[in-house]
Each structure stands twice: as structure tokens, then as C-alpha cells.
Image 1 (cartoon, rainbow, N blue to C red):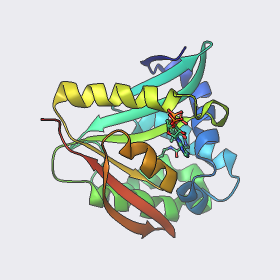
Image 2 (image 1 turned 180 degrees about the horizontal axis):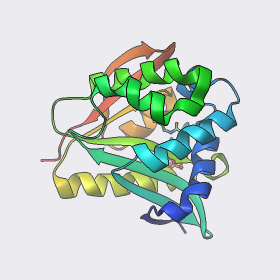
Image 3 (image 1 turned 30 degrees about the vertical axis):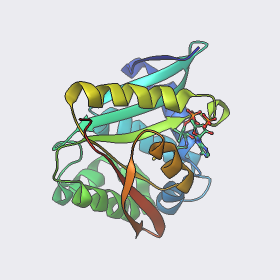
Image 4 (image 1 turned 180 degrees about the vertical axis):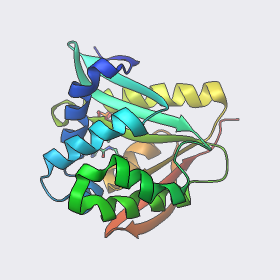
Length: 195
Ligand SMILES: CC(C)(COP(=O)(O)OP(=O)(O)OC[C@H]1O[C@@H](n2cnc3c(N)ncnc32)[C@H](O)[C@@H]1OP(=O)(O)O)[C@@H](O)C(=O)NCCC(=O)NCCS
């Protein structure tokens, strides 16, 4: 049984573990933070959960344990203006050390490309590796789709894994662009507002 509920800050430790384990092998995280850098990923998500993922956040629990997490936020404040990134990164992400310039390049690029058209921005979504392929990600996506329906909004996301492109297509997203960011192919995907 998968139970999706609102994220609460007392779940931060379990959620950091889920997200760091889920993303440590993602190509963009490898490019930015280095291969096998669970420590860097843990710190990245701890900072993210405290300061960056400030929209709607949900966790998926099974057997009382956090197995997955999703965050989404409505534009135009879903990402900061690109010119704020270097300062914000230097302050918030200082512990990233040598990874900092790559993280700044990555996040600034995503901020710059954030669509003008109103949307609800998805990300991050991650499921603990041992719990993947069992419907946890789908349950979290349905919570996001419910929100899109309720707000009569379009959806938008960025992804760095070709298999995720297929995953998101199942939920009505289409690829609207692709490019290489810090050495990694990135797909930009859009889901039109439902009629
Ligand atoms: C992407 C992710 C959130 C999907 O969560 P999940 O719990 O594994 O997804 P589900 O079990 O609900 O999968 C739904 C379907 O998509 C398929 N699918 C999901 N992830 C897949 C993957 N990485 N490769 C191939 N198929 C995948 C599943 O096979 C499943 O199909 P089925 O219903 O026919 O069996 C999860 O794989 C993950 O955390 N990945 C690492 C972090 C990441 O890339 N996050 C997204 C960044 S944009």
C-alpha cells in the first residue's frame, strides 16, 4: 500500500536519503557533483529541502517508511531569476566546494529556459532505488496531475534520463526541446493544460 501525504520537515533525514540514493547515478548529478558522490548529493538535497523546494511537497510512504518524494511549484516563482543564482548558490550551496561552478551553470540555464507561459514546474521527483518499478513514482505523479487539474494548469519539467522521457510521456508530457547542459543531454517536457 502506497500512502501519499504532505511532506513534513521532520521527514527530512529519510527524504534526503531517498533523494540522494535515487539521483546519485543521474547523469546531471554525476556531471555536477561527481561520480558516486553520495555525500555531495545528500548535502545538495538537504539544502534543497530546506531552502529551494518551497512549493508543494509530498512523500510516498509504504510500511511507514519514506520511499519517494515529489515537489512542484507554480510559475512565475517556480525558479529564481537567473541573475540571482550565482549569489544564492554562493551562499546556500557553498559546501558544494569545487562542484559550485557546475551547479551554478546548470541551475542558471534551467532558470533562463523556464517557460513564460504559466505552468506548474515539476521536480525533483525521486524514488528509493529498492522501491522503484513498484508504482511509487506513478502515485506521486498522480498527486501532481490532480494539482494540475485543480489549478487548470500546464505542466513543465526537465530530465536527464532517456528512460524518464518515456515515463513522463505516459502522463501526457511531450518533449519540447533537448540540449546539452554541463556535458549532459537534457530533455525539456511540457504538458498542455487539460481542456
Ligand atoms: C523516475 C522515477 C521517479 C520513477 O519512479 P518509479 O517508482 O520507479 O516508477 P513506477 O514504478 O511508478 O513506474 C511506472 C512505469 O514506468 C516504468 N519506469 C519507471 N522508471 C523507469 C526507468 N528508470 N526505466 C524504465 N522504465 C521505467 C516502469 O517500468 C513502470 O512501468 P509498468 O507500470 O509498465 O511496470 C524513479 O525511477 C527514480 O527515482 N529515478 C531516479 C531519479 C530520477 O531520475 N528522477 C526523475 C528526474 S527528472
